[in-house]
Image 1 (tube, helix red, strand yellow):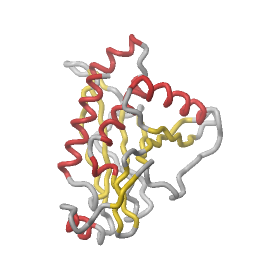
Image 2 (cartoon, helix red, strand yellow; image 1 turned 90 degrees about the vertical axis):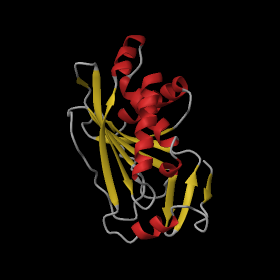
Image 3 (cartoon, rainbow, N blue to C red; image 1 turned 120 degrees about the vertical axis):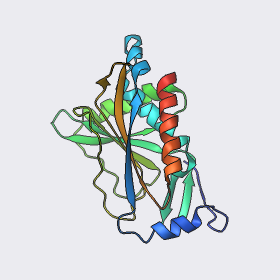
Image 4 (cartoon, rainbow, N blue to C red; image 1 turned 30 degrees about the horizontal axis):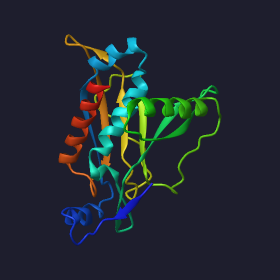
Amino acid sequence: MTSRIVDLETWPRAAQFHFFRTYQQPHYATTTRLDVTHLMGRKADGVSPYRACLYAIGAGLHAVPELCMRFRGNVVVAHDMVTLSMTVPTAAGSFGYAYVPFVEEFEAFDAQAKALIDAVALGDALQANSGERDDLAYLSCMPWLDYTAINNALPGPDDCIPRVTWGKFAQTRAGSEMAMTLEVHHALVDGAQVGAYFAAVQEALDRI
C-alpha cells in the first residue's frame, strides 16, 4: 500500500482538522437507508449479498479521498488503498477479524473475500489490529436487526479509522432496503463526504 503526507499548509480542511483534534468525543455516526432491491435479485445468479455489501462499502470508501486519510499525531496521511477488516463468526461461537484488500473488479474481490473470510471462520484467533496499521476500515454486519441508529466501541479520540455497520434486509412495498451507518472522525471527515460515501455505495449496489 502506498500513501502520501498531506500538506497542511495547502489542505483546505486544515483549520477544521486542528479544531476537531482538540475534542474528547470527535466521532459521529450517520445512519441512512439504502436500496438493495437490485442486489436481492442477483442472489439467483449466485451473488452473495454479504460479500456484495463488502464490495459496495469498499467502493464507497475509495470514492471519497477523506475516508482514506488518517492522522498520526498532527501528521495527516492519505492512503491510495485501504483494506477492509470485518468481523467473522467462528465455529467456536466467537468471532475473529478478516482483512480483505479492496479490488475494483467485483468478481476478483468476491473470490478473494470468500477465501479470506472462510479461513478466519475455521480458526479461533481474534487477529485484532493492535494499532500497527491504519490503512484499514472496520466493518460489521448486524443481520439480526433492522436498526435505526448505532455507534461503535472506540478506544479514544486519536482513533481515526472509519467504522461501517449495516443491518438486516427489510422488505418494503417498493422492494428491499437496509440500514447502513458510517462512523468517522470529524477532524478528517465532514457531512459532505459522508453524503458522497452513501451515494457511491448505492451506485455500487445498483451495478453489481
